[in-house]
Length: 235
Image 1 (tube, rainbow, N blue to C red):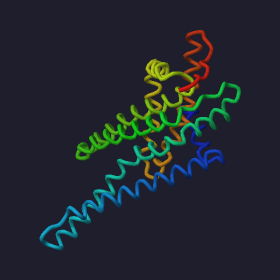
Image 2 (cartoon, rainbow, N blue to C red):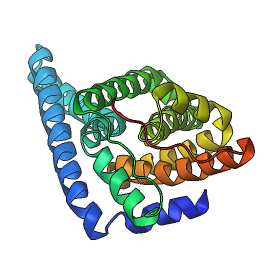
Image 3 (cartoon, rainbow, N blue to C red):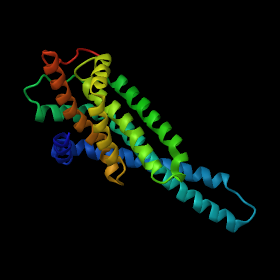
Image 4 (cartoon, rainbow, N blue to C red):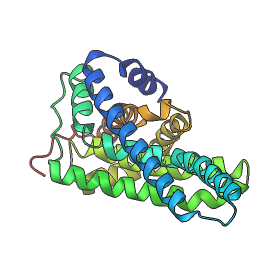
C-alpha cells in the first residue's frame, strides 16, 4: 500500500503525466470558477432586501458561503473532468511499471464518459447530503472520509480492473479484497482533504489503484493457482 502510494506520488510530475495534469487542472479550475460565478449571480439576484446595507451584508455572507460550498464540489468536479484522461494515465503506469504484463484495454469513450458522469453526480449528491453534518465538528470529517473512501476506492479500483476484466469480474475482485481496497480509498480521501492538492486526486487515485489492482490481482491469481487475468476484448 505504502509502496503504491509512493510510486504514484513520484510519478505525478513526470513528463508523461504533466500534459494530462495541466489539461485536467485547467478544465477543473474553469469548471469551478464558472460554477462559483453562476451561484454568486443567482444569490445576488435572489437576495433583495428593503434595507440596502442588509442586502450588501447578505450578499457578502452568501458569497462566502458559496465559496466554502465549492470545496465540496472539488472532488466530484475533478473526478468528472479527469474521467476524460484516466485511461491515458493508466496506460502510462502500466507501460512504465509493468512492461512485461499484457497491456490493458481502454474503456470505450461513451461508456467512460457515462461512468465519469455517474460517479461525479453520486459523489456530489452524497457530499451535499453531508452538509448537514457541518455543525458536528469531528463527526463531519470522519463521515466525509469514510463515505468518500468507499466511493473513491470503488470507482478507481473498478476503472483499473476493468481494463483487464469484465465489470462483473472487477466487482467480484474488489469485494474479495474489500478491506485492502477500502484502505486505499482512505489514502486517496485523505489527499482530497488537502486544499489545492485535492486537485491532483483523480490522477493520483488512478495511478495508485492501477498499482493496487496489479498487486491484488497477482495475490488472487496465486491463491487460486491461476495466471493473471488477460485484458478483456471489446467493451
